[in-house]
Image (cartoon, rainbow, N blue to C red):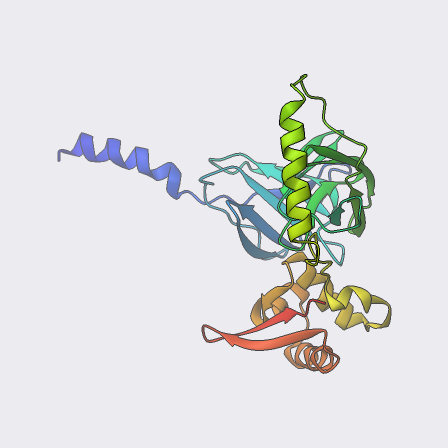
Length: 289
């Protein structure tokens, strides 16, 4: 390889190796956010960073579109967010005030509905998430009024929620039996056949419990009696679907190790969480009820 070819190859590779130290700018006030815990979310993975006046955020070019979640102002959850396009990170990243929605989707019989999409529509942002195996969903949305829409088994459910910056908002979306999607006219006989099949199955399974069981974390029903440090730990676990390593908890809550372990021991004694070893790492997981 001659010198010109080597130089050309270097120029192609160099942009992908350049690190950026973007400034986080409050989109409303224009002020710089220089102290925060930042989470970069992309392709189902999450990476955490600590930003300090002497330790700026440093990011390499992004391989795909990503979501930047920022926790500042000592909030219990994310209070800013921004969408980042794939490629080089800009020098200034405006971040919008945001909060976290923690919700459930239920049918007309109040059963939780699992694995269905929830579409969130806000004035400046739209997002789609799926309910998990317990019928619950989580989404970081911009502060303000947003609508929620669910489509499940040919029926729809609508809801609205007001997002407060830095707060966890709990809500439910109910899919009503009388809210159906519009459809084209079809012959009556397929419905008759389906009805007969349903009746036959109902007779065979009459003693079998129908619908998804209601499953919630024990911690959600004990929020009113939790101490400040315990509530901080529980809220952080709820953000990560109820399971984290002790190292991640300490990093995200910034609690001293002694205080963290004491609080975890108290929560475990009351049956709110469990500690166990996984792959050589101490892990804690919220107990479901």
